[in-house]
Length: 225
Length: 298
Image 1 (tube, chains in turn cyan, green):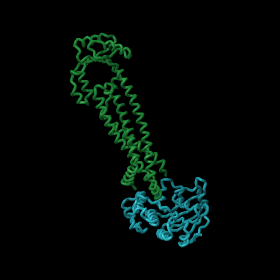
Image 2 (cartoon, each protein chain N blue to C red):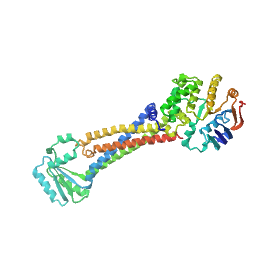
Image 3 (tube, each protein chain N blue to C red):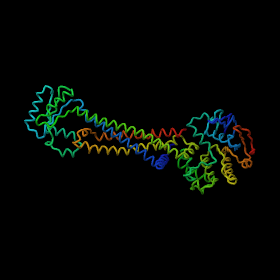
Image 4 (cartoon, each protein chain N blue to C red):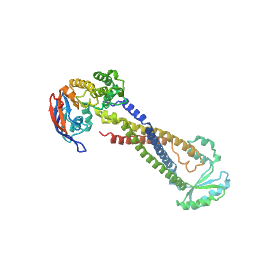
């Protein structure tokens, strides 16, 4: 599903975010990216939906070399790669329902399809009762659920999660992890960058550890360290 | 996957109202500049309409007093025929003058009904042998002093004078209009930039979930077009007002000898409005197009 071949990413300030990284991730895998701040976890994720392009190496997503993707086809890639962030990126002036619907509107889905899909996904993330609430009326965990609903409503093949529990307390984090696990079990490949030792150690999934842009460990059913 | 019209309308509508002051300023600037362009177009057309015929002929007009005696007219007529500098004369009696008057002012029935043949002066249309302005002017002077002559007018020279002064004025109107169109483009550019900034969260999310570029850009382009077209709509009103004012203050007033010659038809007004609509749309498209391509790069 995802393949990195000797990928190097250097930012304009000459900071090397990822150095000669290679990895192969199969469809349906759940992978943790761990490592200290600045080790390249976010860059790893951002390369996969082509928010950034690598200086060297090749990246395949769903069999396609995304480095060769022309600009107008990048949206097609992103429709297959959902993304969730530590800061949720919800639209504060739209309700829970509308935040999720917005993602479908943006890709031109017909109103009837939106009407059907949004309640379904809100049910999945357990927010049916809060559909009409505004984001600032929700707890952090609930806001992250909305963000996951938005990323997953289009049923992407891959879900990228950049420290999704970074702002949440441990109990709430467990709920979010259960949700991501459930999404993973539908066959969606999940990549999650995290600092949360407890979560990684409990879930016992594949762990890719980064340090100064290098992959220093790639371990099936691994722990944080 | 067609773009949903209601989506574009909703987003554009939100942008327009969210940024009301900037939007208002942009539309107003477009309106003022387009009104000036339309006015300049109409004046230019008017100049061509009124002087195209006169430009080709070098004519001297000897107007007789409405109260001139028959023998005074005869004596002027004889003197003109005898003058070696005169090639041809043509006498306009009251009826002929009135006929011409009716043709010239056919669009102003009020004026026509208030004037009778008796109110109009008779005149000689004189074609001199020479086209030299000084010779013509000297010839005119010899008749200006004769009894019964109201005054002598020089058609070509007169026409040129009016044309020159109105042309100068018109050039300035055009220049100011064009400068204001430039200002409109900048204002629309800034308004769209502000709108893009106000919607940066939405745009970020749209990108993230895979919205196509044109889908993201569409509401902004439409917003720019709305600025241009709303401005053109206001300017159409301004053009009609200008037309009405010109008719009332100049064309219908015999007193304005210089300006009442400059006239245009309702067809010209329609062309002017069509032209400014196109310019308005282009102004909006260019302003928003630049903003969108600068701030919404793929």
